[in-house]
Length: 272
Image (tube, rainbow, N blue to C red; front, side, top):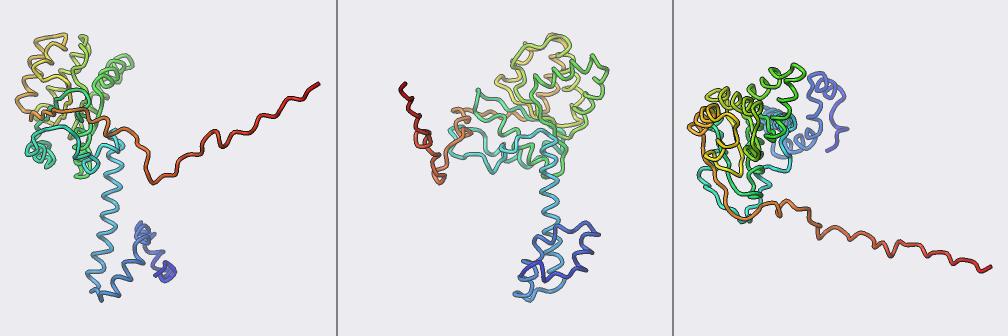
């Protein structure tokens, strides 16, 4: 079956309805319908389901890009042979995203390289596929952006972006001590999102160690207390996951030509 068997009138109507991408799969679906003597209603459901699936996939990809999620960090790409351990039942609960629906939070704690960022971004991808708005940021870059925004008068606008999404992912929280301005911004984010939106925070330190990174102990105690009392504690232990992400040469790929084989012989110098 080829696209030539689809009439020009049908192509025109599909384009007018912004359904021209259905032409990619329609020939195969027509063949299948004829072979199986499919009822018209079932054929219509099949072709429209193809288009709905394509649009959902495209929307999820666009949302993930806007959320600054790493496209390589998705659940289906996680290496199950990684030598790390965590509570699988708790992770299954997090993948269900009930914590997003109830405006709860998640703390992902573990040593350097155990896959905290990977699993945080993977949960972000799941949230995008289910229609939630997501934003993933490294904590130090977020605080730097907010500090610069105070200088050009855009601080409120930048803060609203962080508060508006359904799920905010903050990576590497508590690595460095915060100054007074950064502490105030962190306090605002933690308190304003309390019971109003969900957060995933990854850190090498447990929440009990975050207090020392704030410049204002009173604000710190208030923010951390709100967050931890509405947060799931997800701890990852084991060896570094980063070697699993290291680029590897595919055995099926032909080896590159040797530089020695491509080298041209140096012309001999003429004797005078």
